[in-house]
Figure 1: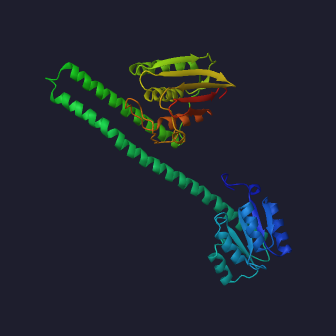
Figure 2: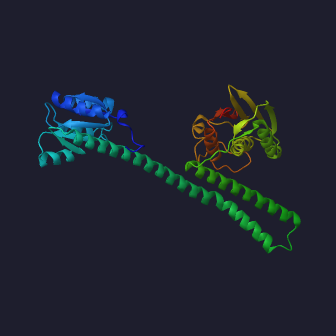
Figure 3: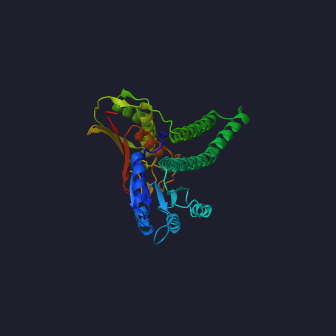
Length: 375
C-alpha cells in the first residue's frame, strides 16, 4: 500500500445485511485484513449508524426488509455527512439491471454472493485507495486555489503599492536630469533623500513579498546557531532609535541577561524589526515605548509596548493574516502593507515559539514573542 495511504487498522467498514451468515463471512474476511467492522441488519439502522460513526466504506445488501439497499444508498447520498462514503452493493443476482441501478443510485461497485474472499478484499482495497487519493487530491487542489489567490493578491499589491514610489523616483530623477545645471544643491539633496526613502520602502515591500512566497511554498529554512538574544535585541533597538528620535519618542529598555541558545538570528531580527517599527509607526509624537526581554519557564520572551491608539478586538483577529488593512493607521503616514506580522508569526512558529498581542482601543498595544531555549 502507498505509504501516504491509511493502514487497514485505521479504516472502518460498515456491513449492512439482514442475513447473519453473510455478515459472518464478510466479517471473517475483513477482520483478517485488519479492518475495523461495524454491522447493521437493516436500512434504517444503517442510516443512523453511518451518520454516527462515518465509516470509510459501506458494504450494502440490495434486498432487505423495510427500505431496500437502493433507497438506503439514495438517502446516504443525500446527506452531507455521508454522501462521500463509497458504497459497494451486495447482490445475489448478477443482473445488468440491478448493477446499472446500483451505479445510478451512487454506488461505486458491487460484489455477488457467494463471496470470493480475494474479490471482496481486492474491490474494497481499490475503493479505499481511490477514496484516499481523491481526498488527497482535493486537499492539494484547495491549497493550489489558496496559492493562486495569494499570487493574485501579490500582483495586486505590487501594482498598487509600487506605482506611486516608482512615479516619485521617475519624476524627481527627471527634474534632476532636466535641470542639472540650474538646480540648487539643497533641492538636489531633498530630491535624492526622497528617492532614497521611496526606494527603501519598495525594497522592504519586495522583501516581504519574497518572504511570504518562501513561507507559503514550504521552503522556509532556519539556520539555527547559538546566539545572544539580548545582544541582538540591543542591536535592533539602536537601529530604530533614529526613527524614534524623529518622532520624539522615548524608549525604555528592561533586558535581563539570558544564556545563549540556538535560533536563526536573521529571522528573529526581522521579527524584532517588525515589532519595533510598528510601535514607532503607530505611536503619536512625544509618547513612550517600553521594550522588555526576559526568561520564563525555559523560554526567552521579548515584548514591545507602545502608547498608540490600540487595536480593536475585530482587528486583533486579522493581525497575523496576510494583506490585512486595520482601522488604526501609522501616525506619520509611514508605509504599512499588512504583511509584516503575518511573516513574523510564521517565523516564530517555525522556531516552535508563539507570538501574541494584548491591546484595548485607546490604550496602546503590547506585542510579545516567546522562543523555547532548548530548540
